[in-house]
Length: 238
Image (cartoon, rainbow, N blue to C red; front, top):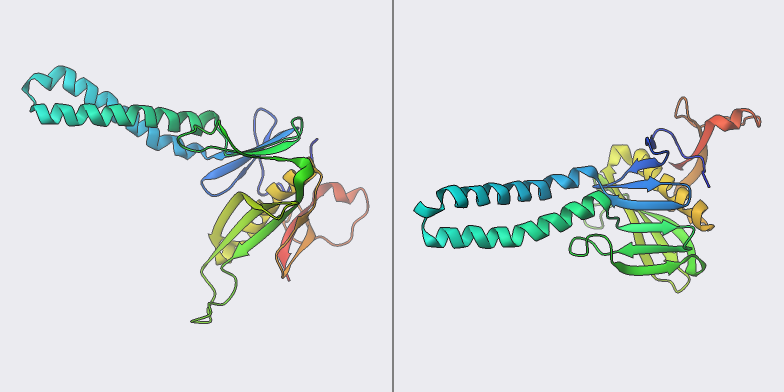
């Protein structure tokens, strides 16, 4: 079930899936599954932890005889703590996912993070219990004290259950001058999820959905059926 998404925020992967970069995360969109997982850069910290432990182990093995006992114990305890935590974090960064929306299973699953390696279920929402999706934005309203808007915009894609409970799918913070890009990325993920789930998506007050020309990135004029193949939808403030 492939749907058109704006090309200026979507990266085509070699495995045929598509990718949208978010805040320290990415959405990987496939035929029947959408995964929102940690960005590739999050593997750096656990790798550094493992390298430190390897170096400490080599140091203790080759120079340990001349080291103070308290230092040996300290290094050993650090390694005992860092190795499992770094391994779990590395596994989570490589194969784990924070949110999985699966059409075959008919559910959206929020999975455990760091300690759970992104594997254990934290929250499971069947498609039938999803009321709608909603894009929210923070920072665009004047501050009640200084009457000034923030320099940052925090976009979020929220799943709203039929019970009224709200669950965050993704977040995209951007500078104020780049709010159109933030909306495009959030909306692209939202449209993919909405099409997979079979629900609707609402925009914040003051924003509207318009068609853009993928070649120019500008709002498109009314087009014929043949011309529409090169157009996508995006959010625009009015």
